[in-house]
Length: 485
Image 1 (cartoon, rainbow, N blue to C red):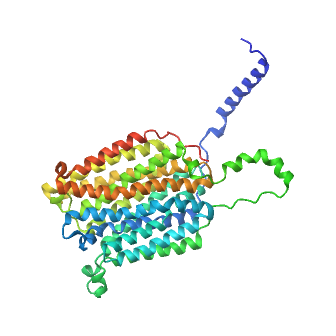
Image 2: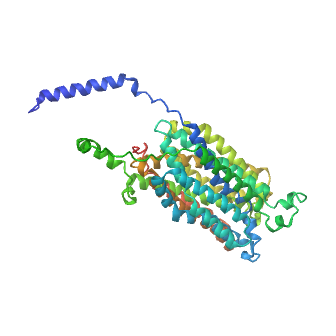
Image 3: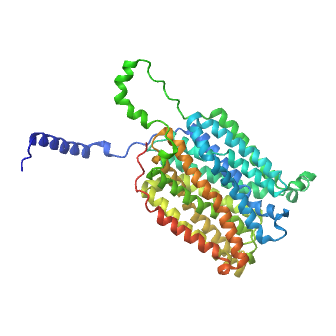
């Protein structure tokens, strides 16, 4: 049937569209775009920098429960260690939540590099203070200091997004968990092997100082690494935030280009926080926050479970054994992420990999009572070690979810000038839940054992239910990433 008023125009447009489809079907542009090479020098500095935070946080895990038990705070009741140790682990994230959005927005204005240098300096000073603390208040203040000065992770993710594009973003973010794993490998090893040096090397560390401060040595070593990272960052890292170009002084030229450039200028300015609360950003932030609380609850409870006596629901391992086990996981996880994460993302997609990672928490939490039961029956034997290794292998899939959620957040930012603020919102939400996670999981562990709730296993039932709830909420994530900028 002919169309009224312009059938000839319709036929011409239709013919052009059809011919365009045929041309595109034969065009080589339909093939996968060539991957842009990564700027490895700048990324290497960022990855070296990203080692600092997991290094400083994980080095205390092998000895924090022993450290707290030696203070007067628990009154000799070892069942209460979980309450106080979890509180210390949560303080860093609580303090970070108060300041991380501020640091992220500051990095959008003055640049990423100055903010990173302030953060790494805070890590360096706080670890020295932590090792020299002899009271519970001293431990609390040192962790609050590092949290208040630290906006590192959100700024690092912003810089990676600015240094990559859609063809190599997965490859760039894949290396971030690798470096986190490296820090998680070295940290427990340093904390487990170097704590209480007078007991291991009495001839070398015979001074009264090492008896008074038995946990200073691992803190001092980690602080020295942070100082080295500060120097490398200051000398090598280049700023990625570009200063806006001055507008033309020619009024006629400005007026003639106003209509063409006004939309670009509007979309490239730093937006207020309220304007960033869009559906893509909120859902991406929720994916990061829920992953954060599930993961930090697991990471905080793991060393507590490993150090708690078998009759109280744990395994009764020594700090050295805990450090070696956690370091082995960090090494395994780092190798896997570096070799396979980009390939897995390319094969299965971001959404599926992320949701599988969330599902793995159900298995991780369910294995804790199984491992304790095996130890109760036969002691810490081959079966127990096999189950521990299996649990660590399952947790590798969890860390892949981090790279996925970082990609969602970077792609959800409306423009480059708001990238830091977007990551700051995400880091704020994650920090709040990370502040809750350690105290929640370790306190529930202690309460379950102390009150014999569900045979001491109530904490695992709660965490499995929380994992299922998070999976149900995050099914709404899109299959494809949001349109970047």
